[in-house]
Length: 325
Image 1 (spheres, rainbow, N blue to C red):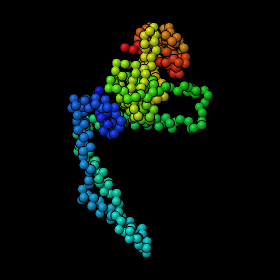
Image 2: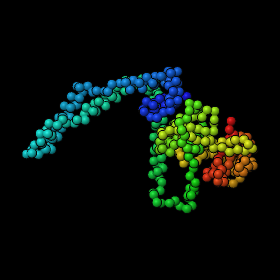
Image 3: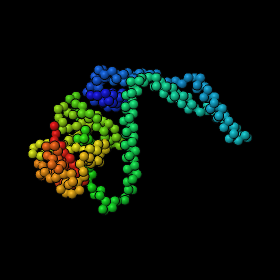
Image 4: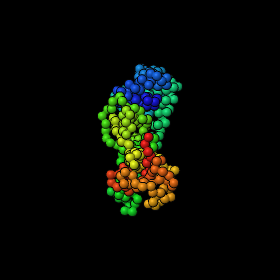
């Protein structure tokens, strides 16, 4: 477990979010042996134990004097001279929110004192992730604004008209995984697989912890906001050898199709040219293609419009598959 994973799990527990007890124990064990993470824990503890901030009385009094004078001037200018305001209004303290603003200012000062240089470095890394998420959400908003209004259908000759919706995919180091469903809280045998950047269909794209169940590399547990989701690697076989679907474009949201690696020119004919040439059929009977002069031992491509039930069924583009280790 790396520093970012440990700090994310510990922060979630500190905020009262549900966190697996085994993972929390692993995160704290990591922090015990890591100086940076131990510093982060001390920062959290100091923030939690800090007393409620209070604005200096002199500051509150001074702001009250200034705003009180402004309030009195405004009342004198606006109120009818022949009908003075009721006594309840005359005696009411003006701008009661002023002390609250001062308190918030003091709270910000307390936090700046508490957070150390090491904590600021870690928070900066987290801030970069939040900024990336904001950029992704902005792009999604632009896509929504560009979508046709409700009730308006696309033209019949549109390339996406009637296209199949992609399965719920995530990608990890270019490998493609398809959702299987919600999972019970896994045991402590989980092994960290790294971070998966995805929205999980929940609207916010961010990095999420992913785990393998022990030595099994065919399943992937991803920790979402409501618990774990289990994904299965998308595979097919050729001559009994298992190949996994890969993508060059990260699948950061549900509804995205895996893409062909950019090192290959997009085929323009059914025989795969100019990038590929036919190389037989896989164990399902789907025709496979290899780079010109290449070999299936290094991977192969599959054309669009595969049969229903095929691991790439519905994909409108070419897909690339590589042998699993």
